[in-house]
Length: 495
Image 1 (cartoon, rainbow, N blue to C red):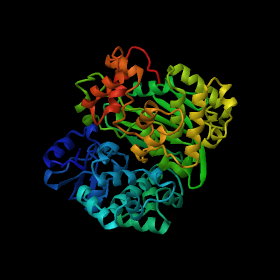
Image 2: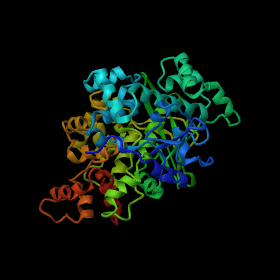
Image 3: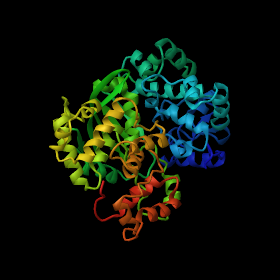
Image 4: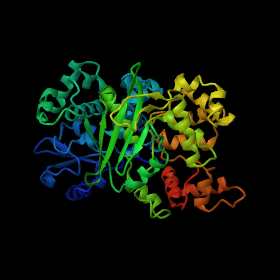
């Protein structure tokens, strides 16, 4: 069990501030009383005097105290603190509430609200506010307002989206409310902020921060060995692919390209114009897919002794939880290459054509409703065995009918249970989906053959039990331990 927010030690924070080390980015924010502005620890402005500094665990606390976000370091670019992960969220209701507010997909396209949050958690609004303020130092409304404003600030600074579209995409019910909140918090109108960046071109280029160390080669190598021709392209420092997102009753289709800017510990995201309306969702999905919010310091403190060569490894996520689930089924008990071949056939047969500037990207992964209606013979002709045919159709139907949600805002325990009730979905597949699609840091596919080999228990009478026993020392970061164990093998994993 972990505390909702570890206490900040001001002197230690000031020492970290002096180093401007990207490893501390997003771990705290510094409010400077002489300017009324709060910054990230990596801000390049002149170091403020110690007596002028106040330190906050997250941006909502700084804004609640009356500080405005720095226009230079831009707090909205900082990686989030994963102490609000699913593993931690089970310890306190406050953490669960914050995690739900962080995930726009947890609300099915409708705007989040404190009232809806209380109803979802089964508590009164008064109790929600009390536990939220006790553990996070702000009210649910203040926390949600900060999230929306920082999201809007990033869209205003990095895109040419109309202000109306920025307001709605960021979760505001109207432009009037957005303008009022923006001016009240930042003492600057949205149009004035946009004029400040008028010299930039009209392209949409968003920067997303992460904390080092980050093994970029390992992350892109993982995606490269699994890339499907037509929907994915992986270069030396770039990941490009097509993407479809259902939001607000509409399907948005387009492409994204993500380039690693290693010297600045950032990922530069470009998206097609067709995805501008759901840009906050695209950003959240990419952050999850590349595991940009991981805290290496906390993870390495638990895992370095067992896996000393894996400090920069992250857990590869997914831009579509549904797609990941289908591909996980295709990868059951076969090699990575064989699974990719089956996925390629599936996309060629059922995928949707799309036009993009990149000739390597011309297909979309089959939509849930398409695979939900797929006949067994059609899937069998692709070389997919009968048991996996049933599993793929069952997943597609569950997703298209809304019975299963596969995103980081979903309830992990309930989702794993629902998945295991579907035909052809066992514990290995459910845990794998939880690890990559639900972003559960403590998932552990104990039955994985490659994991048994990496842990040296493959000759045991009960290798899964031996692996599970060994994994107890790695809680709550067992997903990261799995990735490190796989990486230690001299040959590929079996998924």
